[in-house]
Length: 320
Image 1 (cartoon, one colour):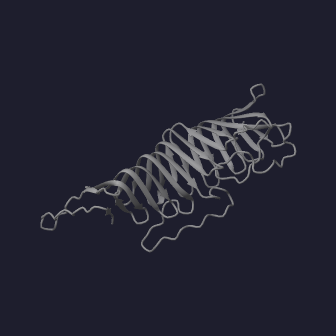
Image 2 (image 1 turned 90 degrees about the horizontal axis):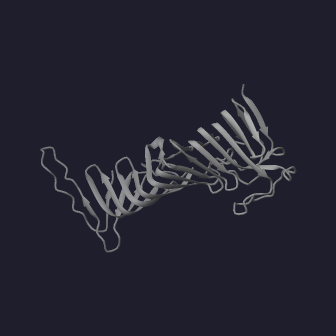
């Protein structure tokens, strides 16, 4: 039989109230509805509540599901002084003298959902003081309305900072357009109001005639990429050491050892500008340096090779 326990804000496990929920945010005040198939255990000496067997915790607009859930609590008022403090004093008159959750742990087939976002992993830890979720294990992902972020090592979501950090073979894709940005580490910044149920969506930039809307328009602000950066468009693959992508403009800038590849053609330089709306990538040389490239000649209808294009210093472009 499925057992249920309501952890009231005015009862055993009260959570502090913070302002302006963003995305997956469990740091807001209010009751926690906890259910489990195999029972709920309250260990008072260890200050922990454990739910086992298809466990589920619901708080506000956030649902956490896992094989096991642990809610660690402490006497109210022992908040980490280094953590971000509430923007407003708690409106809960019964908070004084009660306990508050400071850490929520989920283990085994973890799924965390809001009205707009879904996060998955083998293990999740939510630090209430820092308002940060850390996912580890296999098949790590964070799906928003427009993007999917995946990682191999860890995936963090900082709700109050509107920021996600993906580490280890990190990838952000926009499935509808089959576009992707990959790197060793990706840091994604979301627009204010994104992921908040009932919040007005940010205005979406208007694409020019012939352009396709960039991934994340009106949802994600920008993505910073570090280490082995790779951007794929419909026609090119652009690689570099680091880069930044703006979802509002659809433009990406890559720096370092940059290479633009289209088929057998490749050009190398120190900086590239990629328009992910049009699929055009442009390589820009550093002052005093030359752009280098290999342009494979095309064959005409008679099987004769056309002459290779001459590469000029300054800038080069490969695109449709």
